[in-house]
Image 1 (spheres, one colour):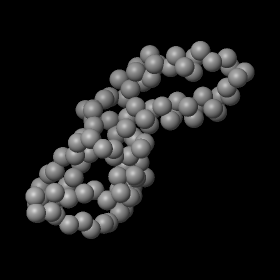
Image 2 (tube, rainbow, N blue to C red; image 1 turned 45 degrees about the vertical axis):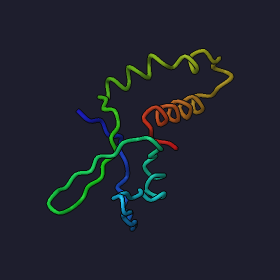
Image 3 (cartoon, rainbow, N blue to C red; image 1 turned 180 degrees about the vertical axis):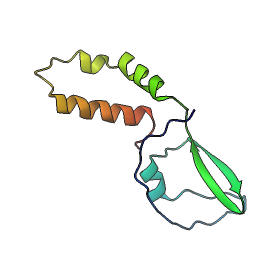
Image 4 (tube, rainbow, N blue to C red; image 1 turned 60 degrees about the horizontal axis):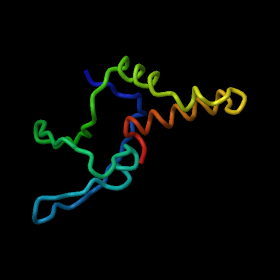
Length: 105
C-alpha cells in the first residue's frame, strides 16, 4: 500500500536536454515543489509512448506513520505546556512530519 499526502494538483512544464551519456536533470522548480533531495531515487516508466518519472520513497501506511509519530514525540512532550503554545506544537509536528517523509528541502 502506498500512502500519499494530499497535494494540490500542480501543473508544471519544463524542458531539459539529454547528455551524451543519456543523463538529464529534474528542473529545480520541480525538485523544490516536490522536496526532492540529492541522493533520492526516481523511477522511469514508459506508459504508451509517455515517459513518467516517479519519486521513489519508502512506503508506509497511515497507521504506521501515526505510530511512528506517537513513538517519537519526546521533544514536544518534554516541553512544558506554558512554554510552547498548542499552535506552535502543531507547527513543530507538521514540520517534523514533512522532514521525516522527505517533503522539505
